[in-house]
Amino acid sequence: MKKLLCAALALTMLFALAACGGGSENKVIRMSTTTSVNDSGLLPYLLPVFEEATGYTVEVQSAGTGAAIQKAVDGNADLILVHSKASEETFVADGYGVERIPFMYNYFVVVGPEKDPAKIAGSANAAEAFGKIADKKASFVSRGDDSGTHKAEVKIWGESVPDAEKDSWYISAGAGMGACLTMASEKGAYCLTDKATFLSNKADLDLEIILSEGEDMKNTYSLIECNPEKLEGINTEGAKALIEWMTGEEASALIAKYGEEQYGEALFYLIEE
Image (cartoon, rainbow, N blue to C red; front, top):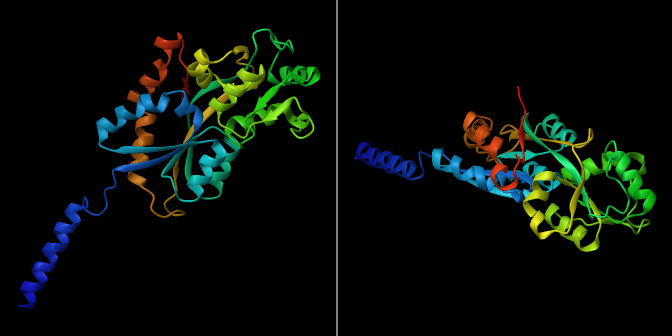
């Protein structure tokens, strides 16, 4: 009787495991990412292809890079896709990430009113343009949210970064890229933005690209798998599968042509090995 009972119990456990996908297969991948790859339409363009090919479902959480990384530190992501090298390196060095994998880039651009009141067009780089904006006290909208774009902006300002409490022309929005662009458009202000997000929103904005692709405006994106040895509940297999696909031939071909039909140019560029 005991043998029969044990056999029945074993069969019950096997059926339960089968119903749960073998107890180990998790088909949901949590990606924490910067707003630009989502707001530009890149992820909505790529991920359905990956999901159809693999059967995974990708849950995208989009925020500024600082907040996106913090979600992973808190154990709420399986991988991150962000664009702030120093923060990414700290994430890995602290044991939260396995490896930083830079795989694509685009450029920051300075946008503003077509009349260009601070006369920044033709500046050698963004730092020179920012200096002219400060001298003119022309309105400037900053992300002010610890995002990758905000960190890049602060780096460009260097020691002369304005104080929003003292400099009335410098507006610290504490908001995402789309909201900042809308604010800059309404106020006739300058703004630092990634080119992809600007182009995907340009039709609704009274702004133009005034300065682009300067030496201090390259914007690199990296993928990082969260470390299962540091964080609990990580879908390691799913994270690895998505990273492998995003850096593989199919995704690379899709990324290389994204934006060409609608904007006449690619919005992101692949890092050649």
